[in-house]
Length: 134
Image (tube, rainbow, N blue to C red; front, side, top):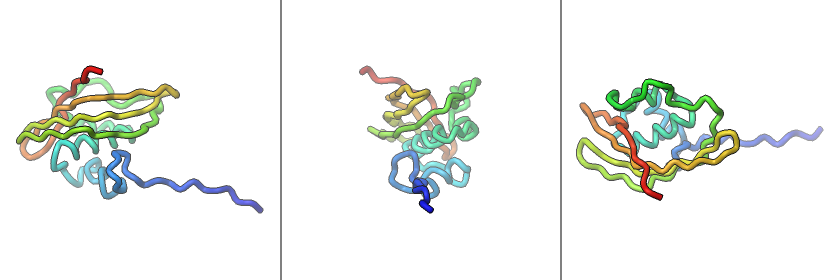
């Protein structure tokens, strides 16, 4: 009897760090660790989007700018990758420029954002982002 080939399940972290999910973003999403810098928080937020983890996205978003409406997509989203272009630390404020690629219903999207982050009482939060000119 011929057996079907089993596709290996990847345990690589979606953020593209090259580490496994368990040794990269999962401890932040589960609340076991706090991100040491804005880039780490940004990568863990990207991973949370790939998992539709609404609670972590809200917990890591500055309450002054966090939207009331749902953050994650209802439509099945295929996340294709993350490219971190620049991390600019500055004390308790930082920016991270990134490009995230994804598909919804077969249509490809590219989100290029320069995100602002702040640190309150030792914890980093996403504030907002702007979209650089193309």
